[in-house]
Image (cartoon, rainbow, N blue to C red; front, side, top):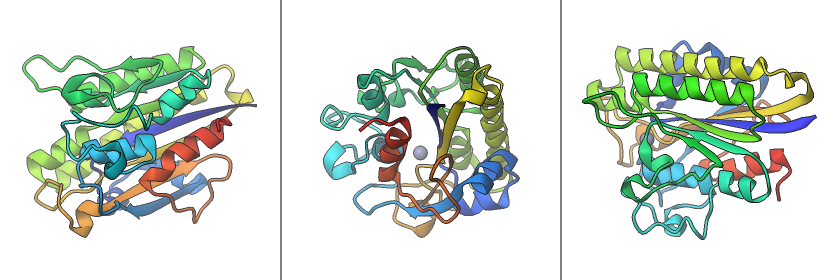
Length: 260
Ligand SMILES: [Zn+2]
């Protein structure tokens, strides 16, 4: 059996709203493995940049030196992401995300350095980031790559939920976008399951959010709503009752791949 890993990065999905929104695909991951909230460590502001950098590297802002969404001055060279570590070990890695700092030089990035990176062009007249249009482009690209090539570890990011939260708060539209994002997760999982070699592969699947949101939309503060994130996963050793924090993600990924 060939070990492969797929990590979904799902921006700004509040834990209580995850539980109260229909999410059959994430529910299936949790049912076969685990889902648990995790508290963002106090050293990290509840902002995308520092939280994704911790998820990528396993160290916090006092080490990676990212305290906001301007990543300039980061120390990611000393603390490479799990994709770069896997790449260095000779594995094939892939990343797809519409928020440019994750995979490009935008704002001092990237946080993730895969072998193959995909960031969709923004819709004409729209800012770059994870909206439903660009998230769907990410999902479609991930499906194409994961179904047609032997990627060992992939990071696939969807940002539309966070954007809806910022625009209209955490009401019905926010919950609806959580369900839409879950459908994109399901689309990518279906592409993986349709791989010709799927029966000879062991896939570890993780899903993680970076931070929560206040009711009116927004984050960066110290409320429990903002500091509560969550991690879900299924795969060898990932059982109901497991609890992991952001900084555990690289160890989970690399140990599943057999990379020291
Ligand atoms: Zn975020």
